[in-house]
Length: 346
Length: 257
Image 1 (cartoon, rainbow over the protein chains, first blue to last red):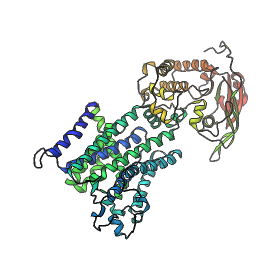
Image 2 (tube, chains in turn red, purple):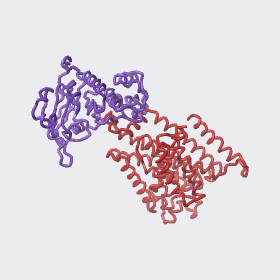
Image 3 (tube, helix red, strand yellow):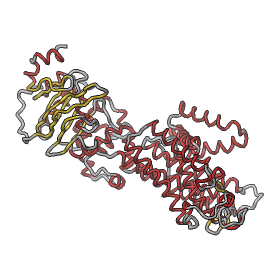
Image 4 (cartoon, each protein chain N blue to C red):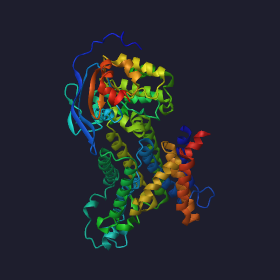
């Protein structure tokens, strides 16, 4: 465990930056921007996988709507980035291009304050957090459990996707946001900016991992496991299980929002397809593949599945979904404890 | 077990639990029908009755899992059990053992007791909680009492059925309840384990109030002082074991079969 955390830190904070920035292009050891972006993206996914593992692996709540929280964080960051395109857009207007295209004359209310980085960062954590808190409170108080909870989280993210597809919602409709220029004054495409985003993502991933490890090692974490194993017993022991479930669900959503905010400037686009039900199911597959209920497993699963996805979508684009389905079935049947389960058995 | 020689324990007087005219129906079926029952402080009460007599439903009402359609359920001086949540009722001092042993399978026996132990059970307290050495001593003592000192670090799901029953009883004890509700506590236990359970319950009576629901008549006879017979959701007979056993109505609906 110590070794893998240290190894990760060396790789992320030293090796990748050196190989990318110090090695001249064309050198065999040069790490191209493609790889930096891919690794950065996978680290964002790993944060999401950790967040889902906290609610699913430890508290037994299978949310199939975590893509929504990720996308909301991404939209929060995206609004800031859109405002800082300035007059460099197609229509050379102060308003984002899609608003000019829709013939809007001023910013709608949702965009208030979005040019301020700190306000945007507040939205990144507060919007997913408040949504998860309110939704979780009503769902858990009504004792919605198991597969019923999974289904309504799917419905939630699907409903949000339909909402964001509408132009009138004010977030660019089905095209979403793209063509970003600057973040905090730095060009988003400059190698140094990309590397800074990469290192920040690695730092957030490490922090998330340490936070999650502290949580699952605390009495709070054991109460979550207790709720997963025997919720009535936990209630008769005097735990208000609704509070515990709302707390972990909200924290998990906030972590997803942060991951989404880190993802958008690196990938350069956010649109409502991030909220599609299939995306959220894929997150659960990462966790299942890696080994749910283990933190390293969640990170490993996000890396393995997305690594495989990057390979397949280039080599055999039509077959990726079949491969994903096959991986999921194989893991469910043969590796109930995920890939980490095999590694630990040795 | 010779009950005749046991000294009469001087209990604190007063009623700890009072059910008055409780009725519960599920889709037209009356699980409880105008049930009234009073448990004195320090009493050990056995509740028997055929399947479907309403024994488990009665426990559900007392612990807040099921809300009665009619009637009053009062604990201690004034706690209205029909309005409190399960967790609030637990904090009032009622502990419950389920029919099927219900423990936290993936946690160790020690951790099971740690979570059950009387403490501040809110989220923030749990995040910052550190177990004190008194807590650990108390858990160790309880593990010894229920015969699990060797299995403290074992995953609870790997314990035998009887050991799980004991662990659940241990979890009730560290919760320090005034009233223990025990639904078939000796199901699946060996004769020796059953005998030790009887001894434990008898030692708890007096300082705690116990309500034991059981089918094992030998066990009931070994601990019983006052017995309540439920039938079709209400009390059919109540009194000392001897008189209940010879009650013709009881023989007809239950013992005779």
